[in-house]
Length: 151
Image: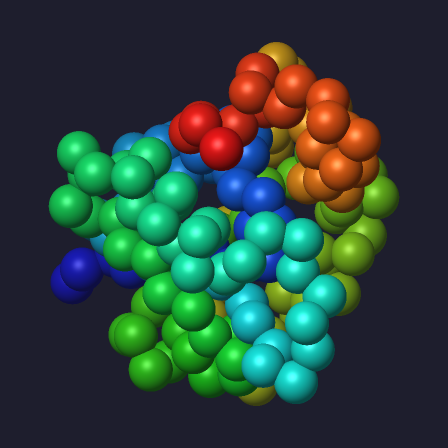
């Protein structure tokens, strides 16, 4: 049976930490679907969603087993639609775990075939946060060392 994982997030922006989780996830899964959560009712993204799709696709151009989609629905329902029995999530610290644990349990109630797999972020990327990168970029700081693509 094909092992498909959904890696959901806002990815605003997609960082080297996210890239690391995907690359390590490929050792566990046959296919990884990167799902960029998007709510068309809100315009709160810093980086335009289609731009981020393009950059993530560029990052994984040599990995046909990685796909990128945009979604605006429950993650558990999306996983079912794509026949993904796993959610892939990265954890930087205990705060991430507390937040992700609750979401994982709700997803499991909604979709009983869905198992969440947590990967601990590699130490060299543990400090990278999309929120901080947006702030640095907003004030014209150099964010190139945090991203796997050029802006």
